[in-house]
Amino acid sequence: MKNRNLNLVSRMSAPTPKWFRIVRNVGLSLSAVGGALVAAPVALPAAVISIGGYLLLGGTILGAVSQTAISSEEYGENSRKIPGKSSGDPAAEALK
Image (cartoon, rainbow, N blue to C red; front, side):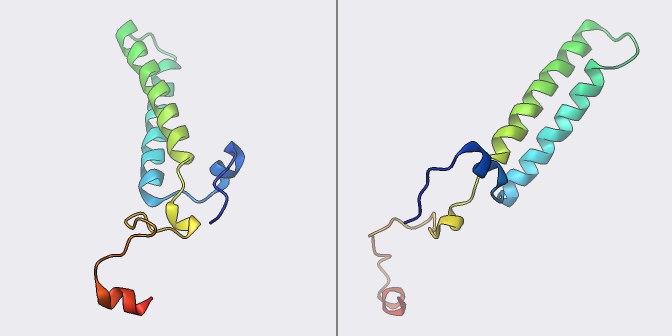
């Protein structure tokens, strides 16, 4: 079994699963829209600037959290199987 103690730098540099790459890109898009609303050179209503701040915060958190996700396949584990338990299928057990 491989060591699961990863620090933040190694988690951020590890490959990200496809679903979390999509979530990360959505978070980056929300951050971009929120940043554009907050830093707009024209006078906008306070509610729009407040919504922009929330979009910026939410998108940043969404992107950062999804970037730290790593897949269990990198550790040689199948997330659908419980270690030590048989599948109940004798043919599958015979192939092992």
